[in-house]
Length: 280
Image (tube, rainbow, N blue to C red):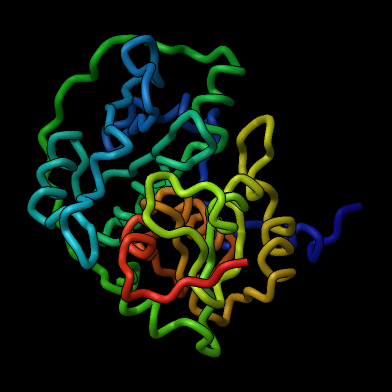
């Protein structure tokens, strides 16, 4: 018999931010729900019924330091175009386990809209279950979105410099081992990692076949084994803020609430000679 304590150990702290494919199939047509497809391609060939499309690169402005965020006005316009209002329940998916979808989850939270979830397993699970995949374009909806920036969700390069080696703050690196070791530069000037950062590769948070998130107890073990605990502030980074968003999503899912995305990421850090770099 499963005990209550065992069930609590398996439970997510924020289960509302992760929905299953069955829920999406039942609610995709609800007036207060908007499904967002963030795959790199394939939308025209078939998608979740009622889904609208957003390119993975549409929500980061590489020419707007220090935060690299779209302006509130630009984000409001994008959300309104998608039919997302202040009261809309947003559900996002992609084809890679959340690498693109989690960034929209994070940026919606940054702009004050926490009513957003990922479809667990994304397109991989949806397709494997042979669910409907229409090719139509959903009807437009009248919507007004109000951007209410929440600075606690974002970190600049200066914030990261101040967090290096600081007690009570952990810096999480979501990149590959080759990037961290400086072997894979990806067109970045310098290789290495931010001093005192801890690697937590984003795909380790997923079931590799279904692309679903691991149970809460497994996620907790991944972070706690690396000395990252809920009482601490966490700043995550990768190259352009996508993989870091998966780490932030998983951390929030299991109850970590002091979370920031260094959105300038290695694209900024590795190309600036004035910022410190550590190498293995």
